[in-house]
Length: 313
Image (tube, rainbow, N blue to C red):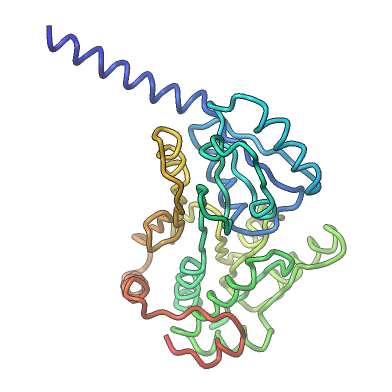
């Protein structure tokens, strides 16, 4: 008889988990143009997860306020989790505090909320180390969009990683010869600049920091046999695979009465997973040593070009 009860309990538990995964809806509230690279990686990860996912575009703070009032303060939202984009994370003023458990903020500053603190600088630094060792021409390039709020910090972290292993490649990045800023007036100009740079630049490894034209960048790079790294979740068969564990974090938030807290999303907290098993042994060992130094607090991330020039990692 006890065995029957156990079986029934297991079946019910499995059914509850299945219900959470198939019926729970994750809604990302954002403006039309994402303001950060980290938000793009979050969207790419969650839209391929077990949750129903949709993105709601709100074009102004006023629209955001109206949506919050109509959909959060006045309706039952037990089967929904709302992710608030970084653009709106510090604007929310909700009267009913009981629904805060349904809201997840990105890099918000308010206490008493569920907050995702996403930091990709460690990953950018690692890509810099890998790129600096992988290049056969001592030429590593960066393509970025300066309007994205977190592009500059990731550019600096990447260059710091390159500097640690390849001073020649570092010098070419420092003087701007191997750097392209995609901030231009039209998408057509962006595509032309992107194609021209990838095909004509002497680099054989490229770090791409933009939320748009990723497919274009990948296709052009493949056409001219260049290696391209991005901060989005991806599989690079020959070298590295990267995955973000947002699904696990959200599952924990949804399935339990979670306390309001900050969830750190980075390599050091094992919430960004980087698989380097396919790297050549020499590079693999250097990356592992770098990860150990990061965990011990022995890697400095510069915030300016001047700091980058004087740090020694």
